[in-house]
Image 1 (cartoon, rainbow, N blue to C red):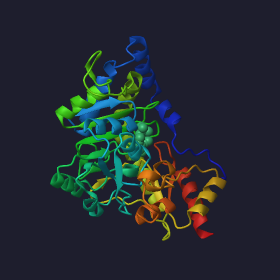
Image 2 (cartoon, rainbow, N blue to C red):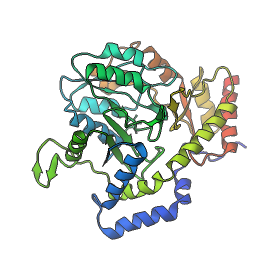
Image 3 (cartoon, rainbow, N blue to C red):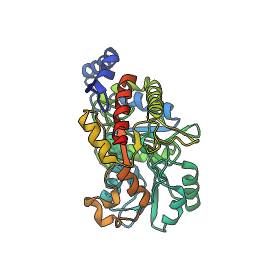
Image 4 (cartoon, helix red, strand yellow):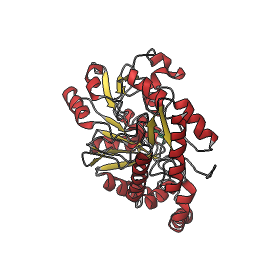
Length: 370
Ligand SMILES: Cc1ncc(COP(=O)(O)O)c(C=O)c1O
C-alpha cells in the first residue's frame, strides 16, 4: 500500500470516541453563560492537582503564559539569569527574554535530550534566579541532581512540563518536583484542549496566590491592582473539555507507550537510535523521536510516501536568529547541535494502528538501506 492517510496526531478520531461526553460538557458551559472562570475551571484545577499530586494547580491561557507568570511570580527580570536548555521549543527562551532576563544555556544529555546535570553546576552565577529544565518529548529530566544543585544555591526550579503531563521521575509526576511546574494543553499534547490552554502547578501556598493574582491583571479584588499582572485565565470551555479528557489520560499514555514499544521492535537497525527511557523515568512519548545518521534521506523517503513526520527542533535556541543577542556561537553546545542535525519524530498518538506503524517503520528502514 503506498498511502494510508496517516496523521502526525489524530485529534478528530479521538474526539469522536468521547464525543457525547465532550459535547455535553461544552453545552453545559454554553447554557451556563459563565464563560470566564466558570465552575469548570476550579473543578479541572482540583482534578489536575490531584492527578499530579501538587497542592495547587492554576489554569492559565497557554503553556507559554505558564512559564511567563511563574517567572513573574519569582520576580525574574533585567539583570537576572535563568539556566536552561537550548534544545527545546522557543517558548522556554522567549519568556525569559520577554521579562528582560538572560537565558544561560547548558548542553543536553544525548540520551534523554534533557539538560545535562553534570554541566549545570558550572553555569550557576550570583545572577542565577532560576533553573529551568525541560522534560522534552515527555521524558523527564534527571531531577535529583538538578534539585540538589538548586538547594545548594537556594535557587528555585521551574519545570517546563509542557510536553510531559503525567510523565514520572522515580515514581513522582513531573511538574510537582520543582518550585513550579508549567504545563501546556496545546491540542496536540497528550492532554490537549480544543484551543490554547495551560497550567502552573506548585506546592508553595504563597507563590500559588501570587500566580493567581498575576494572571488576573495583578488583582485579587476587582479593579484594585497590587502587582504587575497579565490577562491569562484558563477558558471555561477548555477546562470543561480538559476535565473530561483527564479521565482518559493514563489510558492514552499507555496506548502511546505500547505504540512506542512496537516501533522499537520494528526499527531494529544499528544505524537507528531508538528513544531511551532512563531507569528513573516513565516516558509518556509525547513524541517518538529517533536519531538517524542520514536524516535528509529519511525525511525525503517519508515525504515521498506521504508519511507525516517532524523535526523537533532543527535549530537550537542559542543559534536562532531572534535570540542571537543572547545566543552563543556555533559549536558551543555540541550534543545539542548534533541532536538538532539527527533527530526525526514519527507519528505517535492514541489512534495509531500496528499496520500503520509497520508501514512507517518499513519506510524508515528503506531510507537506511539506500
Ligand atoms: C517545551 C515547551 N515549552 C513550552 C511550550 C508552550 O506551550 P503553549 O504552546 O501551550 O504555549 C511548548 C509547547 O507548545 C513546549 O513544547
